[in-house]
Image 1 (cartoon, rainbow, N blue to C red):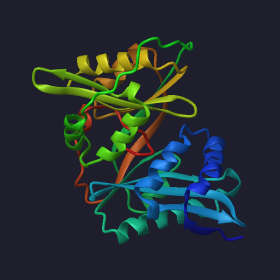
Image 2 (cartoon, one colour):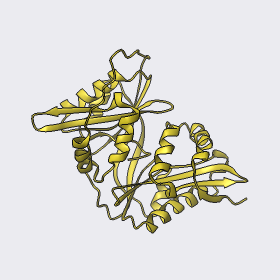
Image 3 (tube, rainbow, N blue to C red):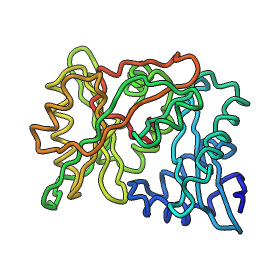
Image 4 (tube, rainbow, N blue to C red):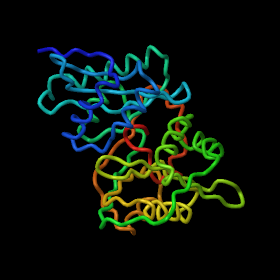
Length: 280
């Protein structure tokens, strides 16, 4: 039976959550809402008899870089070309928008599919996971009044403007929005978001290891979750030693891949932790 590919909408979210729960992913309904709010014409659903069996989603940063995420297929329907069709629909949409560069974070299992569509490796990442006893957080939440300096630095570090997404993170989890300053200005910053399984740290950016460690320790102090995820690029030399020292264990590898001219290289050597495979 052939699957029908159509636009994903907000009514699909509960069933999309079922798919990601079956796969053991960490996303929440708010993450799906972020994709649909940012690019409603670029999120897709695969259905059979009105049953959601797969998704793909895209978000465009600054009009020049697109991210592809949420490519997932119901385990009962894998191996039938549905993931391929969903990925092709996402790429066709971005091509129609004349987006010159597309990126994604691939698992080892997904990488061969992306390579068939012309994606090539940019650099590797490693997901590190901390498991610890649950703690009670007594400190009051804080939220920086102004994020513009952070947004300016992030455009340089990430390689494209994703300010609206970062503002969404800050609004929804102000307790995880951290800024480190020194005499020269912004020395680093961190954001985070609660997932269904764990709190995700990222983006986590610092000009040096000392600032990175301070931001990580403050994030860990503010999180009450028993599990923390962070995805560390291998271009960064200080992040893995810092997280390992705090008890994080290696969970899985990922590969950042791109298709088209890579005009948004950014500065991954400053990135201790990415925003996550959903958003980059």
